[in-house]
Length: 198
Image 1 (spheres, helix red, strand yellow):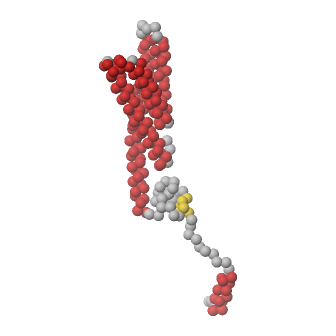
Image 2 (cartoon, one colour; image 1 turned 180 degrees about the vertical axis):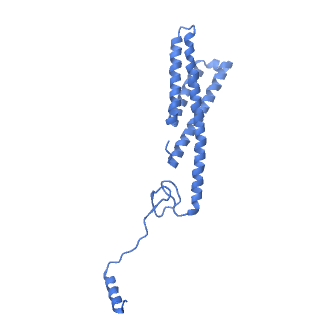
Image 3 (cartoon, helix red, strand yellow; image 1 turned 90 degrees about the vertical axis):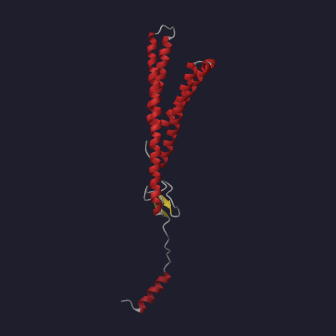
């Protein structure tokens, strides 16, 4: 088929042609998220999926499962804090019954109770869409009202049963809101890491 003369001719032609080096690919596509990574990376820079080592795939999926469980527990804390906001709003809404009181300031008390009730209902509703910001705002509002309540009658807060009970109730509410804020922050971090849509 090829004679020795043709082979020598092809070798001379190949010697005259420019030499083309074959390079290794410089990019690698992630099998999990289709992100383009550099070849020397061991893990995807977008999702953390192992690019070269198939043994680490199990570790990757175990981490996702673990993060999903943490997210679920954090959502239950946020839901409990949201429920507490609805309860506070409901108790404040019952301030409408002060309209029947024999007090000169009954209209002021009723309007203040309705305004605060609306605020807490709004914060509870807002926590469905943006839990971290809503619960942090509720925490700050509760700190402000607790401080006003404690310092308005400072001596009675520590000496009477109603004062001590009120302080303990404020501390419990602040604790629940703080746990909700921490859980909402944790949810934001996990959503960012796992690319969940809220």
